[in-house]
Image 1 (cartoon, rainbow, N blue to C red):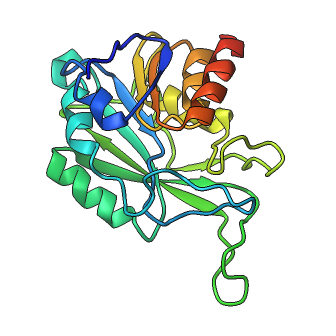
Image 2 (image 1 turned 90 degrees about the vertical axis):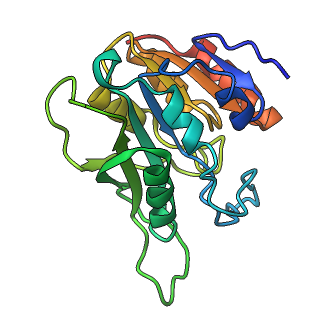
Image 3 (image 1 turned 30 degrees about the vertical axis):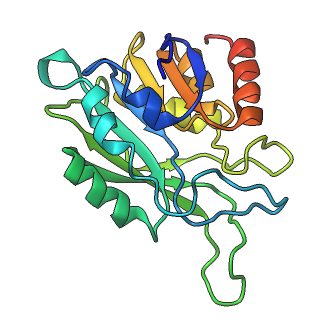
Length: 224
């Protein structure tokens, strides 16, 4: 099935199908939060599609569509969780990426989990990987980024990330006008952050409701 791929929009469909129709070396950065494979269920009972096992299957085509070397500074920023992080790192290396850093998002407030026998989770892991030669467009960012997590009343997606956090990450690895891809766009936070920071963007989302929410949020977002 052919899909029309346009910039500055979100595509309703399967991320693997869309990625395989994208031109090679066409994207400057992939910033995404794929299904971790943990059968996540939020406090309200919301679930994530394709969350039965770590969704690493996009990484081969992610590597293919990223720019590299003289054509650009292709990079991947991938959210994950400590217990599946190594699975994603191993898959990234097999796909051709060079894994450069683990970035920690300090969420300020902790989540729930096993309140009797596990440390209260107040951070999230992010893997930073590159294709070919890479250099930061500005100053060297730190590997600890502090942004308060969204409260449950603010969230429209069960694993939604703050736009401010995503804007920070986008600005760290790209320059204005670069093209950002998010194959698991959810409610569109990465795309909103890209628009606000003056980057071009393409998003993909499979869920009907989140796709509609992302469309609305993108339309309402204003470049800063």
